[in-house]
Length: 297
Image (cartoon, rainbow, N blue to C red; front, side, top):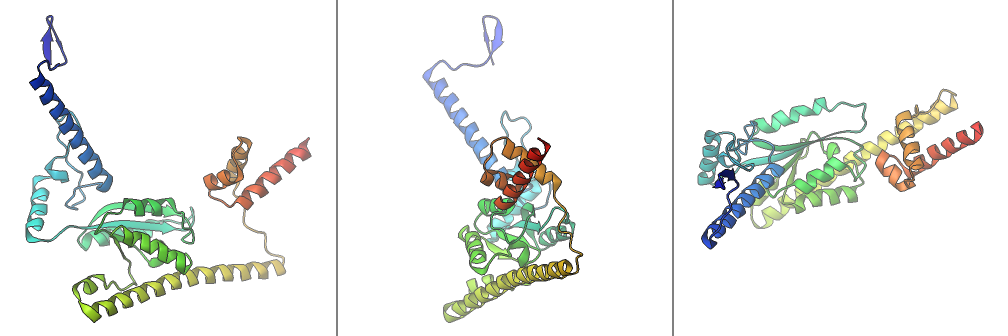
């Protein structure tokens, strides 16, 4: 602030030296803001993994990290000690998934505590209610996009990550590895650290075994999905033959959304994407709606 004509107003540099200094200070503030934003994109809490909130400088004119993104000086010093000892913080991203809105994710929440107890800093938790046989799950795609080198993707079981056909499941795993991250899933033996410390033929053999175990787990997840679908189909056929099958109750909320979107001029593909259903369902619901209107007229 500076006094001008007897009134206080914003400071305005006048000399070339003052202007250069002001530009430098502005540039530093912008860099601090960019670093803070980048940090917050990756970390939702203390960088030391204690789970507490990140500390900020309260008297700073811009959002500025205190203690290098930790909650306290103690946590900042703990990170510095690990760096001096050559060890690094283990970072995990947790993926929780159920297939339908009626199912509860609560049972899977325990793996968050398990990961923290194993010494992992949980950077983020991704919760999804969608079929594992779909590759376009929004939270899964967000997880892959936000992955950083050295991080670990943790899930309750391999079928939480994927029930896709083997080729598509391998593409998903490859996209995770392409970010420099790896999977850590109970039931799938992780030989990555052992293979990394091995040399020559031993390393080749360990990596081959790891790939085989992962392929086997992914294929078993897909087989289980297809077996369930087949048993469901057989049960429906038996119920139909006995005259006891009434079909799935209509999702009236989804039907109302489809009608509203189509009436607003949305295409069939856009409507299917927005409502998370198939194009054929959109066509059927819209045709039934138009038939009902014709009947009223």
